[in-house]
Length: 107
Length: 107
DNA sequence: ATCCCATACCCAGATGGACTATGTAGACAG
DNA sequence: CTGTCTACATAGTCCATCTGGGTATGGGAT
Image 1: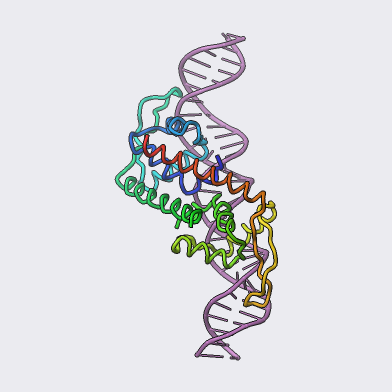
Image 2: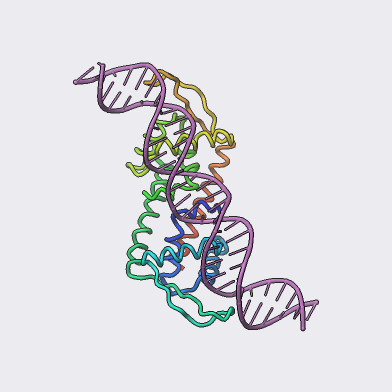
């Protein structure tokens, strides 16, 4: 996968994954990989800063969960109300973008 | 429009526009704006470096055309055979990306 | 017992493509 | 003869993502 395609879409993807149920960082990576048959393979270096940014912006909220294999509590991220609004906006943005690209292809 | 969405897709868009007929820089900007009802509004600072890069990579070829209003010949860019191959590949890449995003949304 | 791997979190620095801003120059309108 | 449009071009900035590391625990393999 060309990583540049992710630009500006990582937020949309993360919010989409967390829309159904809260997950912690590592589980998000696995979930993304499974739900797309290995297409999305997020790196931790990309994921964690993005999660922190989304939390900072109030689109995600973090709750401590059960202990992981490293003995520390996992950080579960869930989508806030503001996050759901942002998700709707980002979905619209994405579909208008793909729509515009499509219109170029078939005039 | 979120400019980050353009990342990695500008090549696809330019090749798509030039697929039908050769155009020069300024005309590409207008064509993109008209074909997408004002959605794509390329800046020259993004366009010209991209055109040069695509020419460097052999995906586009430039021919001097008629004189423009500034008295100098316009540079018409056309898609090479390698460019058409690349276009096919980039189209596939784009649709598999949107497909993956879609699969996340509706599991 | 010791090594290696998977899990799980995190950060500093590099990357690179699009952006902002600016410069050149001729044509044409007012 | 000043302002605006066309048309090309580049220098420098920005910033989201990537690379590549660091820390720590527990379990399985040797």
